[in-house]
Structures are given as structure tokens and as C-alpha cells.
Length: 232
Image (cartoon, rainbow, N blue to C red; front, side, top):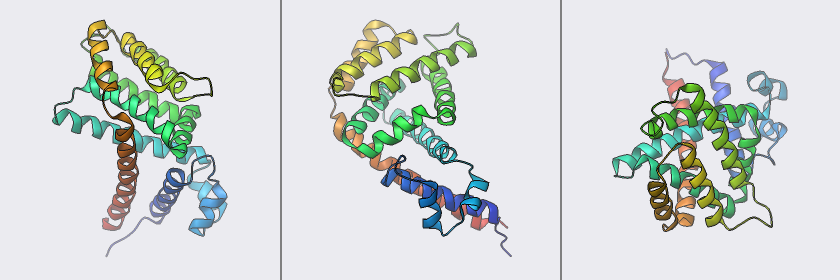
């Protein structure tokens, strides 16, 4: 007889509904009350599992980091270097934010959240060790952590645009030069990778990747439900 962990099932239902709301209606516009109403669940029941909306945002950011790692591995298998993949990642995120208000709200909300930032920086550290180790062979963990803090600030500043912000190409070019410089990537290599990234149809690419991320979240939450139902 299959035994389902009701607590885990409830948590999964909450995550599925919340992430769907965040990616389709917007994180800022979604309230705990709205999620509870969709689930026909009391506020107390939801907050027992996730005390705040920020806890649910952190779950979605964790999925984003897993998706980005998966994407990088797929691109590596197709011959794209990890360095180029990182350049394209920031470029496509910035382009998505310019074209999709809900995406911009999600990414900016993530960078403003302390819980989400812990996940983002931890992910940045691990990937930086993977991609930049040859340029930073004498670095210890603390140096990679400090670099991640600087890089996350640059990324946020790049996405946080105003009416007077420079065009996307200028912002991304400057941000990537600075980020790659922090990790000691040689100047000529930096310029080559950035130039190549900027010649691509990154606006169309950003919308495709955004669509793939939404699909990835749907599959991940569905698979989590199937895994729960399969437990005995």
C-alpha cells in the first residue's frame, strides 16, 4: 500500500501554486492570501510550511540555479565554453528583463531578498570555482565568496534600470568586462567572448530561455509530486 507523506504533499502543492503565480502574475503582485485562495487553504496552514512569501521565492530561485547549471552543461556538450555560457546568461537575463515585466520583477525581487541572495551567491561561488579556477588558482574559498558578493551587486545594478540607464549593450558590456576582470580573465579573451555574445540574437534567445525556465519549473514540481506518490 502506498503511503503519502501529507505534509510533503501539502508543501509541494504550495510550491507548485506559488511558483506558477510568481512566473505568470508576478512575484510582487502575488499575495499569500491569493495563493491560499487558489489552494482552498487557510493562511495558517500555508505559513506553517512557508512562514513568508520570501521563503517561496527562495524555492523558485533554487530552481533557477539548478536550471542555469543544467543549461550550462547542455551548452558545454554542444561545444559552448563555460565562459561564454556565463556571458550569455547575464546577457539573456538582462534582455528578458527589458522585454518581460514579470521576469524583471522576479529577478529584481530575488536580488533584493536576503534568503534568495544567499542561494544566488552560493551558486555563484560553486560555478566560479568551476569556470575560473585556472585564472584564480591561488584563491581560497573566502576570496571566491568575496568575488561572488561583488558580482551579485554588479548583476543587480545591470538589471535595475531607470529612464536614464545606458542601452542594454553598453550596460552588459561594462558589467561583463568588470566581472571577468574580477576573476582575472585575460583582457583579450574577455573582449573576444563579450563581442561574440553581443553579436548573437540575444533578445530572441532570452525569450526562449525564459519559456524553457517556466517549463522546467512545471516539470520539476510535477516530478516532485510523482516522486511523492511513488513512495511506499
